[in-house]
Image 1 (cartoon, rainbow, N blue to C red):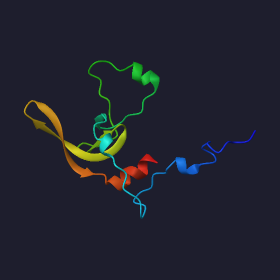
Image 2 (image 1 turned 90 degrees about the vertical axis):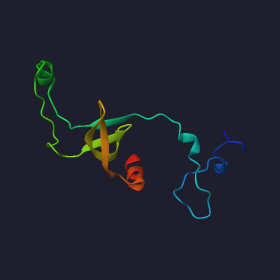
Image 3 (image 1 turned 180 degrees about the vertical axis):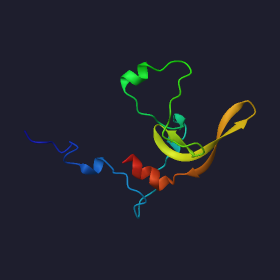
Image 4 (image 1 turned 120 degrees about the vertical axis):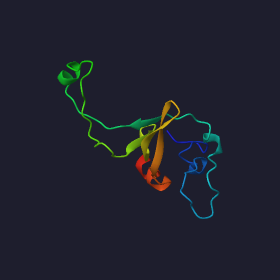
Length: 112
């Protein structure tokens, strides 16, 4: 079976690759992505438990996390670390004051 001239295998120019700041190319327009909803979460820390230990937890139980008191919290977007921060109270709500934002270059490296 032979491929016709219209198949993507014979016409690789049909599929443009994305390059970071490639010389002579127009920058990629990300404007259409600005309204895409993402999930932002703040992680106090983590704990690893066996299923037995998890099922034995009761109201009032203390679950020790791997972060020490006073350490910055991790701010994640769709599960990817983007910043560190500390808890603050604004009015009657908790908030996060960002103390360190991961650079866009570092975030892109972690996505690959």
